[in-house]
Amino acid sequence: MALTGESVSAEMLSKIPPNTALMVITDKEGNVNVIKLSRDSVKDGESLVRIKGGCWVPNNGGWRWVNPCPM
Image (tube, rainbow, N blue to C red):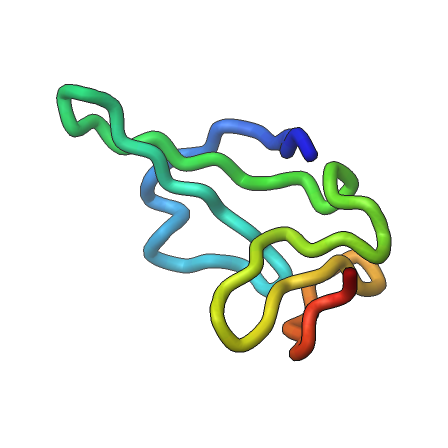
């Protein structure tokens, strides 16, 4: 899976809108880069990320936590 998104200001971390998935990446100098992930880059039936205890999957234009994760 290759995720797509758009670069957004780190200020967005202070007030994240509903149904928003953000990725935070720091470079070798410690600069913070925030990417707002596109829901369309995750196919229906796939998970965005899996962690112990469940995963986030696309759902009606947003994200839903499920446990167990779909295959």
